[in-house]
Image (cartoon, rainbow, N blue to C red; front, side, top):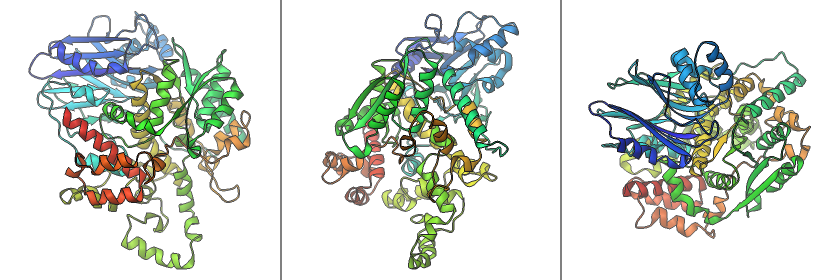
Length: 618
């Protein structure tokens, strides 16, 4: 796990100070070493967190004659298999690192080398023969890659703050991106907070010639939901266990000590179960809890830890966690509104005191249908919410939807459309965003979500649940969940690996029939993640597995309430004389949100206000 950077200047040589400035901004991602390579108008930079091949894995790394150079962030879990294949084809290796496998794989297979990798990765390859830089990002978007382009240069990096170190960089706020942030709590790729900076989407590759010609981004892989209805449930259980076991084992390749996040939820408890069976010593596990009991799953984490005899470590997060907001904002580089970044920050800090690498259960809800939103969606499609309404509400529902479709999307005739799905997941509806923006910016809230429309077009033949699983895997998972974990972990120089967010696991999960993962056969209520829960009954009790899903939530609703510990600070930050928000938003609307304690939008505004404050100081 590392930080990468690179730059092409189209009309002048590059100074070492420029690329060193970019890599210095990524020092937290790689405290174990740094390196730069410069030739005329091209440079690569690298910060290293050493996990594999501690002695000879230094980057940037080249092939034998120096015609190919790479700066790589991530891990290739099948690199030994690829190394053997490449050796048989005549390639010579000087190191034992997965980085060198990328170099020779590119020599052998060109741009298609990316299709052969199993892992998490983002990299830039300088090809002196073809006179270009080739960029690629992993299949599911675990590792980030952002880039900047103007008439003078092209630059790429792991984080936005590295691009801000480029000489002569000019950045303008992308207000459409900000509206999408208010809508979703993140800015989806390819947009960023700046018009001149873009994100390479997951499973995409692109190239830039030394004279500045940029290729179109090309998608090299797409997950396809193709349910296989020929297998029995017993056969599915056997195959699921084999797939998970294989993935966990592959993700344990390391030359350093490691552990696991253990929230007490189903997914992390599954990962710890397989780690404990694979390893010959106790797994180090790490959990975060809250004083507020409604948000505390520590008792379940303790049950899993005791079941497997782990070396368990715990930390309690208190309301003063808001003190880390400036640090979170600085590292995320753009507005990012998922408040679970707070406990993620703390669990990463806790783990780094003991190990440099951990495994986590992220991706289980997307792969196996576990989110509450999926259950509500399925109930909605089955007319359940309509059937349970009083007669007078049934009669008024069509009128309410016609007059206020954004406010009452659930009152529409049940239909698996993108508009209806967005009604289940938006953090601030169009009507609220129109009220919030100042008059000159209200038009922003009326524009569509381009990436969502593009991806939803691929779900025409999918079942109701598969549609929204696919959408989350293409949007929410990489742009929120994986971004949150990547940044929070890299703040503390901790590598986090995700065995469920794995190409093989996701491709397998996409063949499981919908009804095996989600159904309402048990008492009429919809339940999710059923296949995984049945598999885990051999390890955990029924009460442990089938309890109400809590998630990695934060008690900010209590903290922000009128009598909460953070209410006064919140009000001052958003409405005080020094607030930066009034340039874009209506104070009256912000005041209404505070009085109603609309926690989600308030956290989005608080994060954005701090981001604006920091941006004005740069």
